[in-house]
Length: 610
Image 1 (cartoon, rainbow, N blue to C red):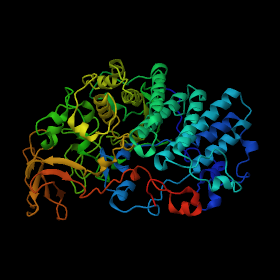
Image 2 (image 1 turned 135 degrees about the vertical axis):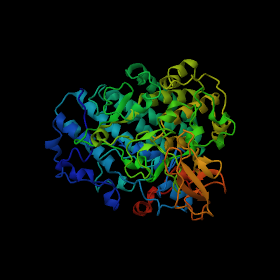
Image 3 (image 1 turned 90 degrees about the vertical axis):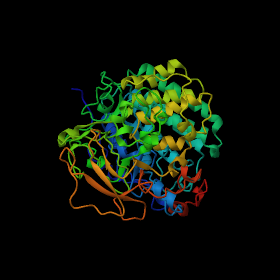
Image 4 (image 1 turned 30 degrees about the vertical axis):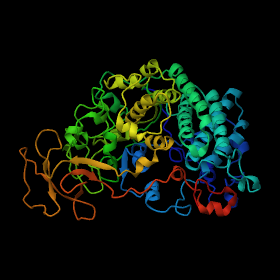
């Protein structure tokens, strides 16, 4: 069994030395802008002396996500999944937001910690090669910090020093331009990509992790610049696309990674997300490793049950048919009920959504209980349930052991293909070593150059500018399906300048009529839909299997019913009456909190924020 590092910042490693470091942010007052920690909190002279000291500090910089990735598509608000919670973007679209109401995100403690490390690590008495490795790690985490800030605010101050109360030029700095910040980010990534160790213990950052993260940002920034006219940076996008191609090709050629497959198209994809040991998996570039009673994992019962988040119909409709044809080409596809829409589809659909005939083992608080899956329908929920990332076992130790893949080789292949197509340089050979590797795993037909255009997808992405528009449409579909519920969809919608997608009211299961409906695919009814004018009877009907039918009164918004439908007697389950308005380009960014503008008026606001 290989050695694995279980890193949980601020919990697994808890050392008094860092108490003064880990709580810093520039929030409270001008003097708190990247507030300095007194030198006595950490005696740099006596601490940064050995490689063990450096490793100990760096582990506390690890800021990678955890099981929350599986609900990020919902909590960030996307067309993949939705939430009943009052999340930031939903609130923005339905209110009149300002810098006094949108106040999250302005936390700079991680940067202060990184810069403190970079200011002191060279005191260690170790070889220059090792020092460069640690500098690379520090600059990698600084790049990651600034990537998040650029995505949120675009223009922000660049700070590469430990700030003290005497640094008024920093404390009262104006924003640096996006170009300036990104150039610094690229410099940090480049240094890290050339100096961080190529190999590392599972759970530690290696050069391949740096390059995977670097490629992710390059693709994001390239497409963001290309499709966001308000930045006036489209001419520089091509160079970033080429960098993304170069970095991903290096990983593909030299990283010894491959798509995980055992020849089981109905299981292999799902096994990536319910695996107790990903350390030897050839597809995994980086994972969060868990071990019961040491560092417990588990996504929790909330992922499946009707808690706050749930999948949407729009994502289901993106999956191709098993023969590779568009689902939207099926006659009256929009009126397909639950059983029918799962018939003969891409196998990844059955490994992502709970499907007709699926068996629920871990019911937890899910009212319908274990056994053959029958939806528990409720107002403001779609009726669909997610099984990707849901650990369907009652054994707590098993659940706590399951690792989470954060950087997969699959994403590298998708990045390479998309960047090539955006430049109009994609070849059939490129497709065969990227998209078609993913399709081979699940037994789907290959994608070829000049594919047919799905009018549904074409209408969504009418702003694509490339000689290979048809290819980009299918690569984006493949990316959506392959990376569903891994937390990538929100960034994709933002970089493609498709925030208007989010104005469309999300929908759930379609019912063609009131009355009885089969949800398990066995031809036996499981639920009974009644009009709002009728009451649920005390003496409920039992089906031929001896199961009591579940009754629901349906109606429209404002009525006292169990379920909202799009029409009086038929339609899709309705989730929210009005999604509001996505204001472009304003809502692609966030305001700096007004409290900070009051403290430092030089920061200002951009893109129409007040």
